[in-house]
Amino acid sequence: MKTTITTTLAILTCIVLSGRVYSQNINWQNLKSEDRHILNINSGFEFGLVYGIGYGYQPNFIVPLVLDLQYSFPSGSNVTDDFKSKIGARVRLFEIKNFQLSANIYGVFRRYENELVRLVNFGSEFSGNLGYYRSKWFIAGEFGFDKAIVTNFKHAQAYRDIYPQVTDGWYQPPTGGNYHYGLQTGFSFKQHELYLKAGKIFSQGFKTGPIVPHYAQIGYNFKFRSSIK
Image (cartoon, rainbow, N blue to C red; front, side, top):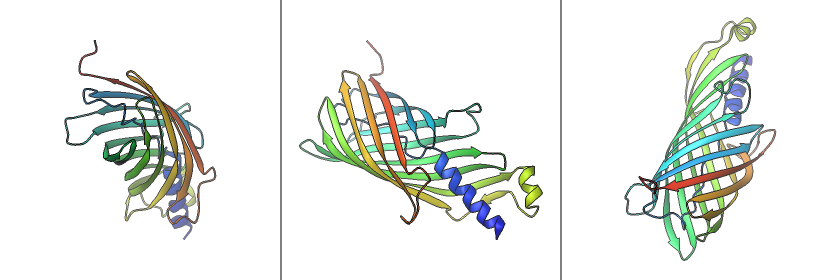
């Protein structure tokens, strides 16, 4: 029982500390069809200072679509101990005048390590944004869900000294998830974009939440064509 409880807490800790909601924002009204590439840097707060980088590519498609690759990590002396990487896409679903709805879907791979255990996790993230977009600014609401699907455990000797019966390996079925909701806004000028987002986090079931149930992020996008003139 103690091993089960400790394992569950470790999984939840991994989810909480790995920077769930740091995705680049896009002003769809300012995104032109020739803007093929989007570079992103960001920084935010969620239990501590988190940094992120990202790259987006806009292919020719029937609706505005951006393919994304993102990487984030917390500040600290060992920046490779904990990280989160995501690959996926964001797509604008519809536009009514300046009101627009977009959806984001990602596959997630993350790593978390402390003095007791090293965890690597595969998961998924789904979110949607609904807001008012102009060419120079936007404001939108966001709602999303991050799910840990399968997690690999490698326990340290300090942990084994307490619970010798513990076993390493992959754990299934899905182990936990978190919802988040909040607001985002941004300002666009030429090829540049600054944005800010903030919101709240709930664990799956809406009954509990992390110790610090809030998140915030500031980010910058630079958009360019295949060749910069």
